Length: 236
Image (tube, rainbow, N blue to C red):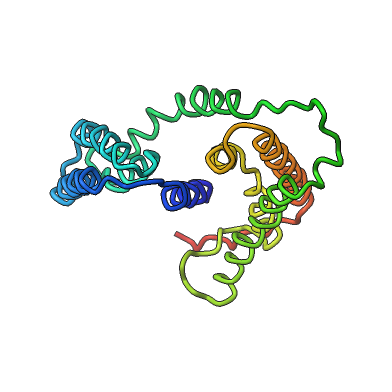
């Protein structure tokens, strides 16, 4: 769910923060992506051709004017999720990248972007329109989008996904609460939207307040929500 949530943020970046588009480079990116799709459909499960083409795709997307983060999403969509020997190219790449992303890239991004100067700020600053809107967008918006969306799928039986085994309605709602912990992508979009200066400090204050409120409420709800025991498995 967190991955899909971040994909939504990347699409917003691509659609909302693209100043100009170089049609030739965009066409080159489309051609590179088409080659990757053909490799996938032909059953090529070696990783190196996809990595080489993904690097070229990143350059083409960057030069096109579209935000280069889109290249990562597109590349991940066409790297095969099937392969021989019990491993898949996409899973192999994910496991190789995970330690670097979890313990280097994300912490460095946080340290570089989350610094908030409290000079001249008070609790009343949270009531300013921008920090309040961002905090409530994370806290209430994620509950509305994920919580109401999930329960609508379950109640209306849209068959988009099965209900998580053993999870109660309160626990599902608790996960929607935790989704309001918007840190990296929220700061990223805030930086693109407001640039440097006093307004960016207000953005950081709103992100931190909304994330803290979502984390606290989500923890308390999941800590005390009764669990729903899964049905016993059939014999054999």
